Image: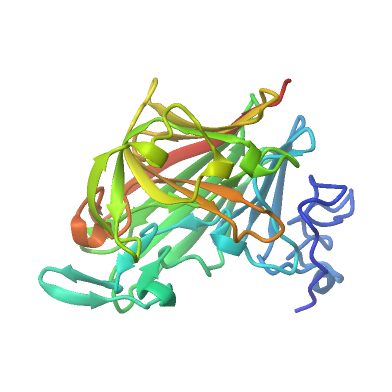
Length: 344
């Protein structure tokens, strides 16, 4: 595969992850990434085919790999962390997660009393992490000027004997915000357990994330052990209380929250800059949990902040917390999105 050199998220052109010709947008058949044209082999990306959505000053780039969000920006201001053409998403940046989000302890759970053993994908903690589609190619279902819908199958396998489809729709709305709808469809003959989620990292342009304030209006946090498996809950307090806003630079955080504050069916979590600009992730009532991850490990950033909407927490297959069972032939959807206020 002929890969292009990485493009830095801090380059002079943050709105463009690659130099696609103006008359051959990403995903188009005349030589765009993944297209069928004669020069398609020279326009390949480690995260697969790239789908660009543009509306007004908004840009979203969605990837074939994991139906991931590679970039969302407004007016040239980058609002999510991104990565280079020759890279897969670092730290699961932007990927969608099915049929479970976060972790399953030891990769083990029980179905009707029978032990199920999933592959261990987080070797350092001996967990099965981030579902079964993180390395999957998603097929194009529908594409319009302002939206794209991708879908991948979860095939029956050891540890998860169900046949499902995960469908993800990205849309740039009239207000230029990003709306993401994730749907799970059960094509099996038996009810299937699931937790859906996503793993976006937010930022505000070139501002260091440690200078931003994170606000998450949640009343309860999940208390975890050293392997980040929840062992109980407690009311938020101290460094874990983000309801009044906390400076990111003061936090080392990898924690899930519930008892979210919903307003008109929406819970909103915000990064705020000293100059008054904000970027927010919102989620609907089908997402009763949010995971906040503040890391020093994101390439090229001294700190990065993931705010992850989820329908259930880590190890839900064993604890039952937030776990849902999807009947045969039925479907379930969760909706989340990103909005910004960029006036100073």
